[in-house]
Length: 599
Image (spheres, rainbow, N blue to C red):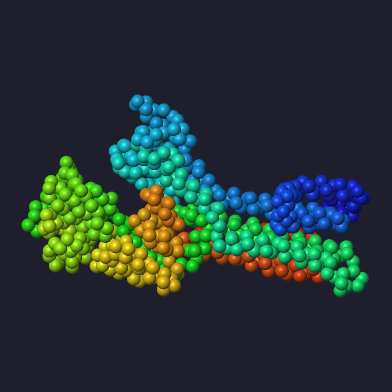
């Protein structure tokens, strides 16, 4: 019709033109009209669908058929762009969904069977061929195997596992046929939990989104009221009053005021931020945490497992009037009751020396160590504070040791100590430097000795470090920083430090793939254990916030200008359509930029 009108200077006569335009209008706008009708049935008149329907039907009523159709056509184009952008943002999440295999080979009575992974029960053996994806979490039953973990951690470096080590759903077997003993059901795998978390994240609205939703509820009725004023108020001030002219201006006003750009682009901006974070191995539990990360000025970190690898090795065993092998036997027997990395180091060092030896009545004394009975002997294993608690004398040089130590007492008598060293992560120093570049204060809290904590803090350039802290001591320190007006992100394992994670503005968990509880507790999960991802999370939050506020500013400035022009009769319906849809498209394209950014 436009080609006929402007290209060939031909317009079909009424009612032929009305019939053709009406068909075009219904084809382009039936979704909008249907939504407006459904909302109107529930007395919800103040929304963009009802606003557009009133404006376009009004345009038809005064003979502006092409303008009425154009509103719907351009809105449909805008919706198409929005859908395309959302689908692009979902690709990283779909990529995770695609790595869950829909078939698995299980060994039953020694025979391989190919079945649905949902039918596998705990402790069954599954077989994974070279190039196949692991379908369920478990422990490796073969002697060794090498896996590609890139889909889960973003790291392309192959990871070699030994017999008894954990293997996760989504990993790809790179070499020989391997057997895995299943330790979690399909629905309970780490991968399934991560997928669920990412999908839930899109439903958690940020403060900006909530503000815009509230704003739209107030904005739309005001716009309707102003449109009525534009139409009828001139009757009292303008002579002669032309209803057709002022009604047209009111329609222009309604079309321009449609909040499409805000309604569409803001959630899309946050969705893009969550997608960008997912591709960088960071999982946000909601778009609200993207906002929180923009305000962080203090990052408080746990030491072990966050800044250090948490892979401890026994360095030396020092005894006093006690057999060294016996000390190792007793220490490993009692430490077998702990899951702490230090305990694992002692067990690994002891090997099978403590075979058949069992500790009884084992009691964990928070922040101190363990107490138990072995072959009738009362054993204490922990830090020097544990011996002080039980008034057991020990050499003064023990307090002067910088390394991490486990002090042992047998039957209320000091027996010796084991020194253990932990290794600082490769990118820990880079992470601290990046935080300082962003003018963020860095703090380290640890239950370890102050001397050890100071040594690590000095090596990394951390601003403040506090050692010898019990769990309640960590809470007190974090509360102190909060009381001083700081916005805090706490980085830890999200399990042992649950009270601190709850207290912080943002709780960040390291090593989310290693702990179900971590995924449940933290607000943000860093999948690959790299401290440098903390600043990546902050940058993603700031990028997302910038783009969202750019969209809000562009939309509001353009709308205000064209609203004034429309009310003054300078802008017509075509210009209103281009302003409305043009701003929406600009905002969408701006939001899509997030997904292409490299950090």
